[in-house]
Image (cartoon, rainbow, N blue to C red; front, side, top):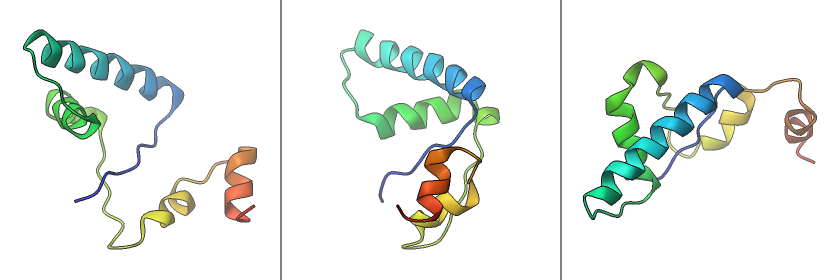
Length: 82
């Protein structure tokens, strides 16, 4: 099992940030330290409506950039592999 990538709008990132912070506080208040994956799983179970899980296939994680390409300069450079 490997980590994943998270893609979202600026508004959704703000929601996700609050959820991550809340989850971290819960674990720390209970003397539990966890990595990002554990925190993200907590977030998913608290707000499944905020997430859309996509399985791209084994070894195809790089296709993520093609699936969620936007008009930003960074996305254009990535498409050209610069």
